Amino acid sequence: MASPNEFRVASLESADERTIVPSAVKAGAIRTLIGLVVGVVVGLGFWTIPYFSRHDSTGTVLFFSLLVPVRIGEWWLLFRWLYKMRPFNDPVGLRLITWGILVSFALDALGVVTAFVLPGGMWVC
View 1 (spheres, rainbow, N blue to C red):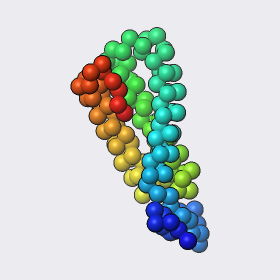
View 2 (view 1 turned 60 degrees about the vertical axis):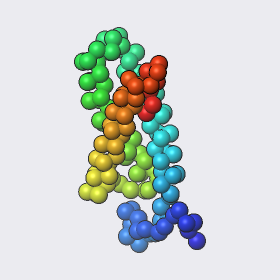
View 3 (view 1 turned 90 degrees about the vertical axis):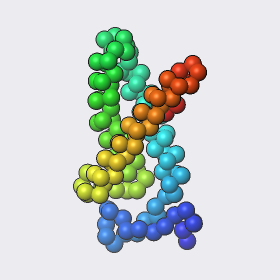
């Protein structure tokens, strides 16, 4: 029997299969861990390139532009691992990835704004 935080839905892998969908808290925790690992690798990798380490506007714009395919991969990984979806084969999956990317960039904007407001310029997101 499913816990109160889980419910049964038809799997996108096969119409005959049934699968348990994890809770939103579990999905959020896994997405956060994916974001932390990938963010550290991509961020450190990008900013160690001498041209971009000056933190000028060109480097920042290029960083956030190149972040789009990284975010697509992060959201694809979440939906593939956790929900056993094939998001690129389904219009709903593509819509979920698009909304996920928009939310991710909105959280980045919140982090940038708070870096200017909080004492010491602490990055939040």
